Image (cartoon, rainbow over all chains, first blue to last red; front, side):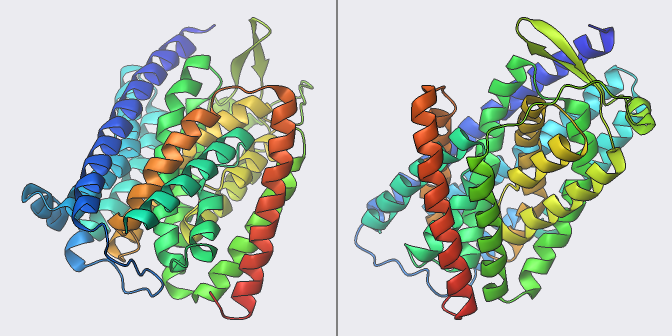
Length: 127
Length: 276
């Protein structure tokens, strides 16, 4: 095994831990918000057959953070989903750091391009 | 609402379980189930599915990484293609009428049903690598029978092109597009099947995250539906990741193919008659 790949493996391992932690945190938030939400809406008749779009405050990060701070259950769920969406972003950031450490500039650039695409989507649209 | 959530949760556990067992992912199955069985609008179903796709990809990745199969360089390099494709697809999804989306999803499901029936191919012939693969240092090793097996990567440009369309489908339909990603790596770039599938799983989360911002801002992601779907698919996929006896897998694969095939026909029919 080349030294290259030994270092790659350490990057891999760090990434694995980041991903698992992020997913667990997200699942906890979604489950807590979900139980809280269902406790108050047991007998509401759900109707999702017609598309109206989620309420505007649930569609951008600032609105979600504000709602979650006031402990609104739907916003807690949505916050969990934002944490989930952020896990791949953190993963790519870890790659930027890892490849900088390896001084592999080609892959620093590759990771930065992927990171830019993710940030355009997440912050450009819902920031 | 409680009953609805419990039923959606159970369906999601089943989708996640079968999806990870067959390697197709739960996303592609849960969207038609929500649309057809639970009468959820296709766009809400796509939003919930996309979220669950990120959860399974990130949740399962750590297990694959430990086994040393996935290739970070190949994954990252091809993620340029999939994230660009996904951004385009997510924007296209807002323009196209839902009946077109449901027909496209039906066709993807039909292909998935077909591909889940075939056993994984193995090819380990040693060919000369693509010079581009050398320059990008994509060639790697993976453990097999207790030792490291070397592999080289072919046709990088064609693989990259197929990955753009995989990303496009992911953004367009809110799925992981795992089947298309594996085609690009396994069939086109000649990467060993195990490396292809695990690297694909790794890439799915990043690809889906590229569409997620667009979906969120368009109001496709409704917390009340996404909640049982995300938790269910995640739980189901964690169970499915554990190895099962060979015979039972064959039966489950067949069952899965039949179910997915039936859903595919329903989606195409529903789309064509304007019901969806």
